[in-house]
Length: 230
Image (tube, rainbow, N blue to C red):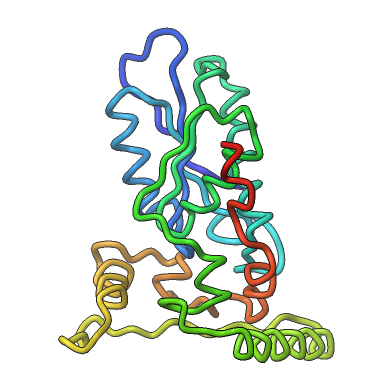
């Protein structure tokens, strides 16, 4: 994984640290970098990182996501922070933004080294992929989706490479009153100079989108299965 480390000015002794990632499909130069910078200004050492298989982080095939991998990304970030001599290992926390909020909570449940967890505008990616927006997808429709995704695995095997969803082509200039609020806000950030970045899947910067079969692992692996143990 590749990340940007932010250190407060005039730091003395060991400091608390926070690993930051998200939103889903974004890169460290976007929202997570802003959160990391702001938290560093308040005295924390912070790490904004690109999730595995996206941005500058390694991994093939590109633009792969899964609850298990992305949950462990936070633990990998904690691994790194714990190696720094100016960080107190007993004061490492994580922050998940939007779709990464769920992964952050998942990671905090699984990894006792994470002493604090916070989310910002949390979004449960496993739920939306399994049940659709506003829980609009029922059991029968979900089963048909799983069959199509399973068939896509055969096609990927035949082609020798994964198929991609294609860019999410939302033109900010064509947004009007009928555009769903989350789509309008998405386009206003990722598709304009304010938030655009060439490596971001969300910015549709010539990338091919997500791997078509990504939802398989999300549909079948709900996050926060043991939230009561937190």
